[in-house]
Each structure stands twice: as structure tokens, then as C-alpha cells.
Image (cartoon, rainbow, N blue to C red; front, side, top):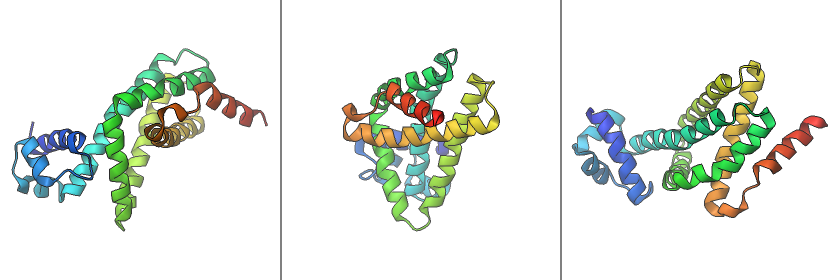
Length: 188
């Protein structure tokens, strides 16, 4: 690995140990085995590095978990697969709790910065597109508008349910409840 990749890996480890709000540039550099100057050279600032590391970490952990479930339930009718996904997502959250928590901390920090919302908007767009790619593969019968709409719904649900899960893991609606709501809306 090069310094950039070492920094991303070191940042993920340091963030998971200390939290996004408490991690220092020195913590990250020490964990990565590189100089402090490497952070500025490769990322411009510690904050940019933290954001990049968290986007990658949460995307890998939660995104890969969702992708796996979507592949596993792809043979089911679409609404049943949707229910299965959301019944199983709390386990994905549990496996990625620290990354989810650090991502929430970082999101608040970035949004307090006047220019920060743009980077998060770009990350959200990448999140939609990743989910859309997986849906296209798992459900070729869907047209492009359906794929985009479901990907956006899934993205919104994973974001909001992730926060709810952090506050109270037992408070999440079941996949069946979510599927019932979607079905009821479609029937009207």
C-alpha cells in the first residue's frame, strides 16, 4: 500500500478506537505509520481524511452487508425481498456499530462547515448509485425509474434507521411493517 491507502486504513482504525470527534491527526499518522505531513499532502486536512475514511468504511461495511442481503433475497418477490432486507439490516448495523456512530459524528461536523454539505451530497449520490447498481443486477425486470426510486428509498431508510438503531435498537419497524406501508401506499 502507498501512503494514501495507509492513511485511509489508519484513519479507519483510529476512528473506530477513539471516535470521529476525538481522533487527532497524530493518532491517525501513528496508526498509519506515516508522517503528519502526509495527511496534508494526500487529503488537505485531517477532516477531509476522516470523511474519506468513514465514507469508505461505512460504504464497505453497511453497503456490502446490504448488497449481500439483496443478492440472497433476489429470487423472492420484490416486496418480500424488501421485507427480508429490512428485517436483517439491524444485524448489519450491529456489525458496523462503531463505523455507523463515527459516521454520524462526522456528518454533524461536516454539516456545521459552510461548504460541507456539498461533499455529503456527492457521497449520497454515490450511495444511491451503488444501491441502484446492485438492484439492476438482482432485478433486471425493473425499469430504470423503478431502480432509481427503490435505491433512493433504500438509501433514505438505511440512513434514518441507522440513526434510530443507534438510539434504540429495539425501536426499528420490522421489514413486514415497512413492506405493508409500501404496499398500502401503492394500493391507494
